[in-house]
Image (cartoon, rainbow, N blue to C red; front, side, top):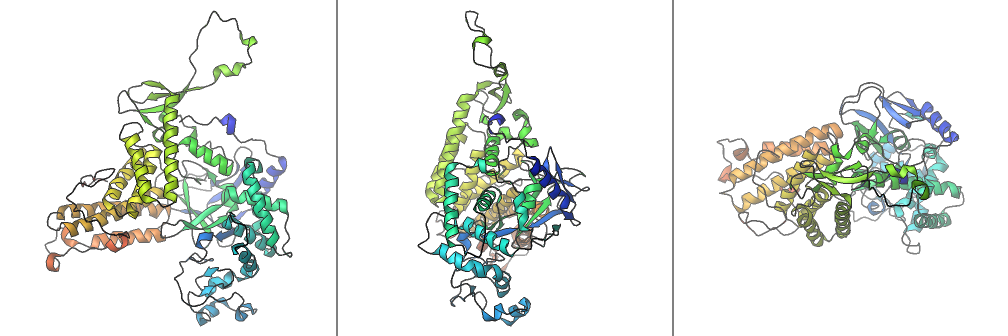
Length: 634
């Protein structure tokens, strides 16, 4: 796909002198004695961070606690508002937030928690439905919640206008309350345990000019409704609040993933991370959020002394144009990182928008710049001085596609039409997936594969093909089709490894390896139940492949998330269970369990709700990709 011209969307480099002085003073005022990075400012890079010394892979290099964050609206009654822990349902009545024992001064939080003044899992506010997992979490949030409770009640009432983003509204309310309660003289000493002072949000760019009129009209309408329910003792500037709205829209980070597929729990602002840790499509760090409201940044590879610290705030497996467009629309950034500057013909981005060559059917058509063909016309009566074109237009680049094997050249317009049609089809099917119409989504994604991959139009590494197959894995799991999910997941993991698009130890690929290992175990267990006498060797092979997949995921996650992260511990447990179970088939032992029954260690963990398939595994499955034969190579 032809990249967007930087002349059309490039961000202006002219920055007011007041902003330069302000950001320079900010970098100088940061007190950092804990983390191995320098916070700096320069005219070329603006605010940025560099390594103080050599940093090894898998090392914590920065931790920031959000200045302000809130729980997402759809998780309001399911997870703890303070720590994000899952709240088990309780039949007891919720308690009111006004508790006489709580309001006493000098009350020890630890003593109240051990005394069990309130029953466990019943710490839910009766008025605004805000839930907490323990008395300790409720007390830690009490000072803000006492002011917030009445406002949230009005937002949740049926009389409040519909169509308002409740998560964004709750964040703004929390921001106003914290601004009233904050200590204005608080210094910025980085430790990772204390919240970044709220006033440092003022250093973040607002980018008011980048938002269209419709969004700004909706934002002003929401602010007007919030203004009508805010108590009079909370003073705020309406213009300042509009800037906070824009900052939240552009720079908010969702964090703390759940154990299920529902997504992240919290949303908040991290001023230092957004200002100093720059985006790159080939980053050297990765971050994750925890239930303490912190972002933890870890090194993916070795970082040399003085090297720029970079991370990624978007999905990396998409075309260069889509990445730049997303960054420009959301963060007002024109990405000029090493990956985005690399010529298309030698960049991994050529695979993501690749079209298979019609001549050799093996090579990939990659885009590159050239000059337009010159046409000599001696009969023309016009000269350069007679036209409105400038002299610079003669050197305007012209994009063509060329096969990387047979060097066949094609015009860019037909290929651009194919890419545009495939992207539009993919986006329309994603709407069905968001509506949880899994059967219709499966049919749509399969149509994309048959139309563009099986017909040898798009390359197997195309971001449209890969993302369609990833979504198919999810849909097949939800509709209880593990064989088809396994087949697609194996192809996706293999192609992602081959493409080299992700940096080393990138967690997105590690999570796909975990899914692949679970599917291997699930299919092996179900296959043995159907055909116990003829599938022992295949079951043995599938368990070995599951162990290999879990081992690779464990090695990568130990670097990206750390050896003590909850996901790393889960993978370690899965790996140990696979190794310790089924000794007859894994270790070639002469010992046989009683009645030679097969042990199913993690079938319960990978079981998908719904009725089991009644088809035997000796039948050829219907679907997109046939199940590949078991091999030792993943």
